[in-house]
Length: 162
Image (cartoon, rainbow, N blue to C red; front, side, top):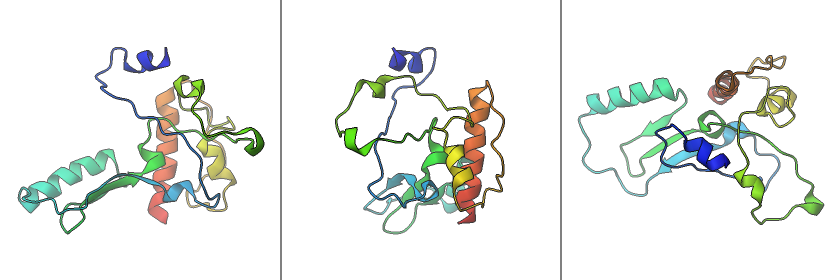
């Protein structure tokens, strides 16, 4: 199955799949974040220089990470589209749509080619916000890693410009 191939020969221990639709159609993907927000202060933390160094290292892997450990509500937030291993957009037919789960959640999930209508790169090109500087669809690539990196770079640039 798709789930077992996701874990095959990998050190992965869990998989999270988020599926849904926006309640309001005017929410740009560049505004969506994922992470943790805590309701209580973090308590005793290592010295500030160690925390700053650790966050600096993590920021190289996640350039748009917003990390705040001090204060009453510590948080780690990153842009959703830059964080996801694969992301796609699908139009639904409102009349035939329903809220129940279906077997498509178990289907293999992989980053679509930039020319595919389900690619979020398509939405960047058609949006009124041209902060990414993207004027053409990147070439299709057989390498899924290249497709993921292109999407993440484009959304990181858009997120940073807001």
